Image 1: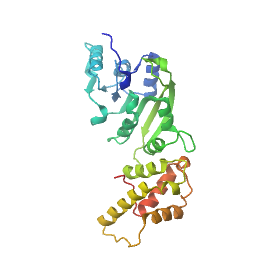
Image 2 (image 1 turned 60 degrees about the vertical axis):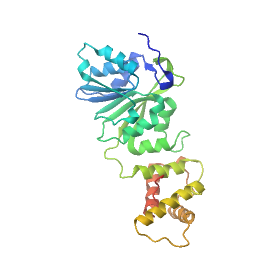
Image 3 (image 1 turned 90 degrees about the vertical axis):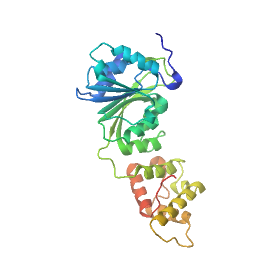
Image 4 (image 1 turned 135 degrees about the vertical axis):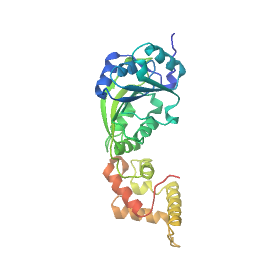
Length: 290
């Protein structure tokens, strides 16, 4: 059976065995490992991993590819080590696994990364194929053109390393973009931070990452949001709000007093944001984007 791959759904099968073997080597798989694979396709990576680990849980949304994968291991000693879950990985709970190794459909890259990093119990590492630019954003440092909210949020929760570049011709059919393999190792224990509040702060700062924080927080939408959050917070904690209270003045006071007024998100590292969020939260300005 000749399968017509749906490139719109990110179906680009990794065909080069040298690249497959390199990914497996970099994953440092163990005989006792349970591996999560997302988007196994026709199983080029899957079969090689089954030879080295205890179990592979392959998550695939396309029933045609599920059938191809099942046929590939049928009647072999590998069949009992493969579990296939059919459906959208973003809409299902992740199973227990030791490591995640996958050539991901690129359109789910960002939501899957954060689903992975917020998953418990902790896994050892993830070796993932991404579109090259997305991969470079994951590892970007302050001051880099590609440094963004994705960079700082990922690096808050994990150590991220760029492992290797993979050219278009290593796939069937070839994608329109170049690819890269990245290693993600979650920080265990994680930083003692409410991620929802942290992400709210980072999102505001990175809307215009080249602006000063003083300018970024003068947006009427941001002021309305924080005013609402502050009033809800005070109501829940029986705190009295002064009659002449103005959220804009409070925000600018915090920025000035902490020395962050003239800082810009593009050059702030994780420690900068941690200190910054601490000052705001101490002054009862939670950053939940309601």
